[in-house]
Length: 450
Ligand SMILES: *Cc1c(COP(=O)(O)O)cnc(C)c1O
Figure 1 (spheres, rainbow, N blue to C red):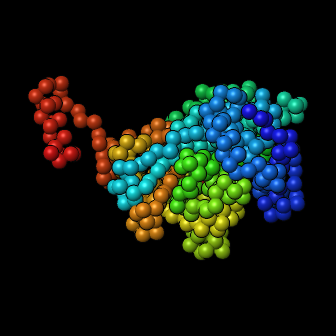
Figure 2: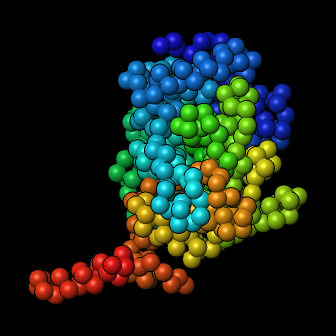
Figure 3: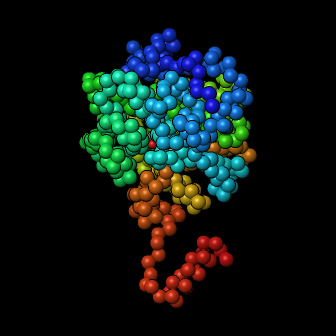
């Protein structure tokens, strides 16, 4: 298998001024005017390889044991981060997650061709692994080449810190994480703790943690691992590429994705851009970004045709990873949605909980953020925007096992302000055959209407 040619090159550039560029091994997060950077690739060089050859190469690497190409991210190394030494890649075989055919759930909500991309079936249980493998690999490569980077750090609503802690631990790089105290799930908190990160629980929200980590990275030379750092987008962009690849390069009609800081929706579009620009596909899907009503600044901007954007103060939501009022990737996201005939939809707390429960009843086990995207999908189907025969892929961002607290409370009917239409609490009975048998028969009849 050929290594990426040295001619494959990538660099940072300002999203506003493409002539303002920086090498990927420079510690820089924003352009001179404060706008975000993006990773640019030498597209002319990549175009020298025909589309069919890329498809063959990607297929040949899938699950290969040749380091690091078996990973869903590193199997596309030329498109992601061509310049680093393979030995310096920090990978946990992320990507290649299941594209779940949600047949029963799809039929229940009125679509015939419904799929859920299970990004949470990953090393730390969320899609954040896709981006973190790239960022930590770049840092590892720089440290091995003698660049002085004392640690990596992030502010997090829970999943970013889990991914950073795991990848940094694997590479023996010190990691520092800043979490809003009491606002992340137990599973999310224990992951960086167990992986040996330096964990700070601060009396603030995510946006407050972000302020602190920005200051620390600027003043103390600690490497910033938030999605403001556009290296993460390079890994995350493989999700859209992978979905299309899993359909044998057929493009679905819709991709629905939850959004908080809005790096992921931007990444989704960036991956699809590359597929189109390099001739692997000749049409694109429409993209829907789904927000929690409690944290909906993008939705509010969409209502005004993206002509204005105002940060808000996000209220608590079951979907805690997207409780963000001032998303860092707002400009990239608006741009992406404009390119992909995008829609922004929102979901209330009750809609989130009920969509999760309904989907769970069909064999899934969804996190609340996925619930936001499922609720948005359901709404667009009801509105007739998504048609019954459309092929729809909703992106599940984390594993439900990281968010059992809200499921427990849902099924105990303890979620404030939510009725729980599908509660299924354990039935407590004395251990007597007759009592158990009678209740069991009653339950089977009631649920399956025999
Ligand atoms: C980070 C995260 C999101 C939001 O992604 P953004 O890039 O911040 O929009 C959604 N769901 C889960 C589970 C996450 O961890």
